[in-house]
Amino acid sequence: MTDDVHAHGARSRAGGSAEPGGADEIEDARALEVELRAAAAAPASAAPASAAPAAAATDAPADLPADVPVDRQLEAILMIADQPQSLVALAAAVGAPVPVVRQAVDRLVADFDGVDGTVRRGFELREVGGGWRFYVRAELDAVVEQFVEAERPARLSQAALETLAVVAYKQPITRSQIAAIRAVNVDGVVRTLVARGLIEESFTDSETGAINYVTSELLLQQLGINSLDELPLISPLLEDGADGFGQTGRIPDGRV
Picture (tube, rainbow, N blue to C red):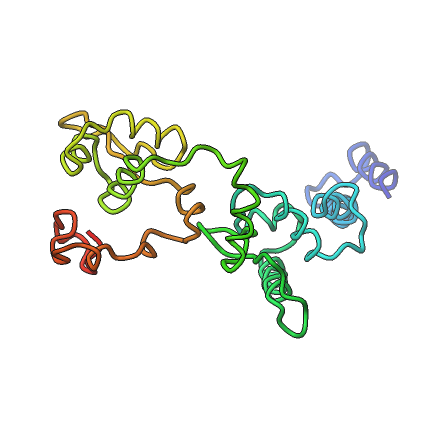
């Protein structure tokens, strides 16, 4: 078709109709338009076929047998995870949509909990700190504690625990404010808590330059809770429950 179009064009330029818009020129223009449309449509129709295998290859993990269920993949990942994994992170790891991963996690939770006649495991899959992670069941804490007692790192001192409690219930808070509450110097204790990752610097006061501290995600994981709202109320433990640690009224439920 291209040769015919070129031939028609050559004849028109050499000895064809001298009148602009003659029959030969109109025919040549139509033929050229048809050819250009056909050429433009061909790559568009071929592109999805060549692109499809590449898209499929990026969805699945490398060197993974095709018959491995998503549930087993998630179980393997969570077994070695040292921190809670979000549904989005798990979905990216196994190359599956988030709704599919959500359903798989629900099945794992039910499986480990002994639902529908399965064996109830000594661990559970729990949502903590915005993600999912394996935890020992509460009724087996004593067994695990006895097993790891000899290898347990040095525990927090009483001073560190008290300082950590002050930060947890009064955050954001500065060192001077912590010291005022505890009536002792807390510089060393604060450094220890920061080094262990239990508290972290949040922001610096623009007027005083003092650093404000807050608890970290690691503390939530260690306590096995999702948010600070799950911390127990301290008011019932104090002589005057209405005062707490000098309650400022910021939190209406008595959590100071």
